[in-house]
Image 1 (cartoon, helix red, strand yellow):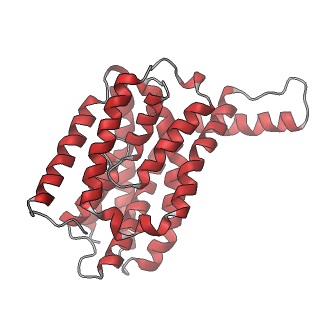
Image 2 (cartoon, rainbow, N blue to C red):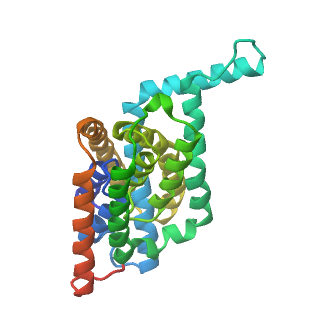
Image 3 (cartoon, helix red, strand yellow):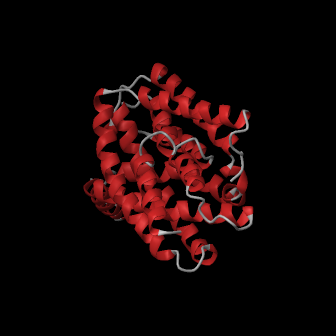
Length: 290
């Protein structure tokens, strides 16, 4: 991977990780455009691309950690202090809203963690780089987001989140293991179905992304070191830094956008792009595999 390829991939990752249009779909497409790791066995190329994408996502993880640093510190501080008080059997001991939010993030992270480990081999393989799969999931999740916009009550915010919200959003996050679904798109959709406001759905989506992105990136980091070509680590670091800087701006934009707008523009984009890819595949203008 060259520096120019790294900057391009970092820009794509940062722009699309938090916007509900599927970062993986765009990165797989971007990798094709620049012929990333071309000339090697297709299975190895798919594994190297998966490892590269997962590591670049660590940049956007850093963006979330910085943007929500105050929330994260409050959650960690309250989580520790409240549980110590409860274990000490203090009469006034109880879970604060911040500590409870910590539990909701843990509960919501379980589904994707379990499914991700069970199907790790399939997720890393060529199937999840197949454009038929990617284009179809872009449209399917777009349709589900449309339904969520219409049926969601959007009547509760961060302080009203409960176990039902965590399970709804966490279960929806499992869809993000299939490229084209979009982690943010799936989780925001789950939040809307659970009755959250659009901004709340996005904020909880971002907090829930922390364990998932961290686990995925760190697990793939070891494999990236083993599988990626020698001399590509510097470029990988550049891509990660670029994705972090652009990802921070994307979070800022989306939270403010959803305060006064629906997810309609992203739904339209998903369906159009997915439809164009399916048409191109059907007409033979591009191959389905990486």
